[in-house]
Amino acid sequence: MINQNTAKGICLIGIALFFGIQAHSYPFGSFSRAGSGAFPIIICTSLLIIGIAIVVRTWFMEAKPLIFNLRNIALVTASILAFALLSAYVNMLVALFVMVMMASYAADDFSFYRAIKVCLFLAAISLAMRFGLGFQLPLF
Amino acid sequence: MDIIANLSFGFSQALTLQNLLFCAAGCTIGTLVGLLPGLGPLATISLLLPLTYSLPTGGALIMLAGIYYGAQYGDNVSAITMKIPHAASIVACIDGYAMTLKGKTGVALFTAGFSSFIGGTVAVIVLAGLAPALSEVALLFGPTEYCSLVLVGFVCVSFVTTGSVLDGLAMCFVGVLFGQIGTDVTTGMQRFTMGITSLFDGLGLVSLSLGCFGIAEITKNLDNKEKRTPFDGEIKLIPTWLEFKRIIPSALRGSVVGSVLGLMPGGGPVIAQFAAYALDKKVSKYRDEIGDGAIEGVAGQAAADEAAARTSFIPLMSLGIPENAVMALMMAAFVINGIQPGPDMIKVHPDLFWGLVASMWIGNVFLLVLNVPLVRYWLSVFKIPYSALFPSILFFCCIGTYSVNNSLSEIYVTAIFGVLGYTFLRLKLDPAPLMLGFILGPMLEENFRRAMLLSHGSFVTFVDHPISGVLIGVIVVFFVWQGASFLFTIRQRSFVAPR
Image (tube, rainbow over all chains, first blue to last red; front, side, top):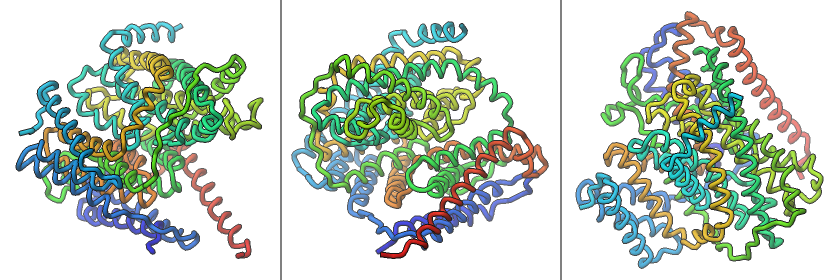
C-alpha cells in the first residue's frame, strides 16, 4: 500500500527539487538587487521544507491508502491528446468523434448509441460556433 | 448620501438592455454549473475567459460575476434536493436535505432563494459603502505591505481549504512556481522554459485552470461510482406565515456573518456558511431543531453564502488583491480587459465598478424570480446521464483552451495539467490555492524585489513598517497556534493507551 501522505510529501519535494535545481543555475544576485534565481530559490526552499515536514508528519499519523485510478485518467488524457493530434493532422470533426468515443469508454455505463448521439450534438454545436459565432475551428 | 448617488449611477449602467442580458446569462450559466457535476465556477469562468476578449468589458465582467454567485445558488439547490454538494454547499446538505426527507423541499428551496436574496442585498450595501473607503486605505500600501498581505492571503487560504494548512500553503507555493515559468519581467531572462518557445510567455491561465479544475474534476467524478437518482418529489414552494417569519432573523444574521467573512483574506462562501450555521446553532430561538431540518439551518447559511460571494469582491476591487481562487480568476478577467483592479479602479472606471456592484443586486432579483418558481425545470438537468455530460464538458474544455490563441499546443498543456490536477486531487491536495499562487506569484515577486531594493536587502523592513508588521505578526501567531495544537494532539494521543 502506498501511503497517501507520504506520496504527497514526496510529490511536493519532487516539485521543489525540479524547480530548485533549475533555479540554482540562474543568477542569485544579492537581496538588495535580487537576480532571476533569488525568488524561486526562496520559494523552492520553503516548499522543500513543507514537503519534508509532511513526510515527517506521517510518522505520527495513521496511514491512508492512495487511490489512483490509472485507467480513467489515462483514457481521458489519451482522448484529449487524440483530439489535439487529429485536429492538427486530419480535422476537428473526426477528432471530436474519436475523443468522445475514447472518453465515454471510461464511464461505467458506456453506451455506443449514446456516445454517437453526443458526437452528433457536439458536431452541431461546433458547426454553429464556426458559422454562427465566427470561431476559427478547423472543422474540415 | 454618496452611496445612494453612486448606486443610482451604478444602476443606470447596469440597467441597459445589454448588461441586463449579460447578467441574466451569467446567472443562468452559473445556476447550471452549480447544479451540474463536473464543472464548477472556476472551470466555467476560465472557459469563458477567452470569450471576454470579444465582449464589451462591463458586460463580460457582469456575466462572470453572475456565474460566480449564480453557481453558489445552484449548488444549494442540488444540495437540498439530492444531498450533492459540488463546490461549496456542504452545510446546505445537513438541514436542507433533512427538510427534503420531511417532504418540505419546496419550503427549503424558497428559504434558500429568499435568504440568498437578503444576503446578497446586505452584501451589496456593504460593498458600496466599504470598497471606496478601503481603497483609500490601500493608498498607504507600498511593496512591503503588499508582500505581507499576499503572504497573509496564502496562509488564510491554506487554513480554509481541505486538508491541513501545510498542504494549502504548499499548493500556494507550487502555484507561485508555475507562475515563474516564462520570461522574468525584470531581467528578461527565460526561467523554467526548458527551451520550449511556447512557454516563453508563461503558462496559459486558461490551460492551467481548465486542466486542474475541469479535466481533473471530471476524471475524479468518473472514479466515484455513486448512482445519482434525479429528484422526483413534490415541490410546494410557498411557506406558511409562521415559516416565513422564521427565515428573516436567521437570514439577517447570516448576511452579516457572510459579509464580514467574505472580506477576510482567504474568506469566502465556504467558511461563511459554516460560521453562520454555527452562530444559528448557538443563538437561534429554534436552535434545538437545527440539524434535523430546521428552516434556520438553511436560511442562515444560504444568506451567508451569497453575502460572502459578493463581499469577496471588495479586497480585489479596492486593494487589488484577490482573496480566493475565483477572485484570482476574476482579476485575470479584469486584466485581460485592460483594467487593473486596485485602489484607482473606482476613480478611473467608476462606470464599471458601480455598474458591477449594481448588477450584483439585479442578479439577486434574477436568481429569485427566475430560479425559485422554475426550480422543477432546473432539476430536470439531472436526468442527463453523466456519461453523456462529461464528454461534452471535455470537448468544451478543449475548445476553450484552443480558442485562447487558436493554438492546439495549449490543449497539450491542458492535458498535462489534467493529469497533474488529478494527481493533486488524489493526494488530497486542493488545487484552488495553486490558482491563487499562480496569479499572485508574479505580483509577490515584483513587490518582494522592490521592497528589498528599497530596504537595501534588509528583511527587517517587513516588521519595521507598521501595517506590514501587524500582518507578519498575524502570520507568526497563526503558525505558533497551529504548531501548538499539533503538539497538543500528539501529546494527547501518546497518553491514550492503545485499545
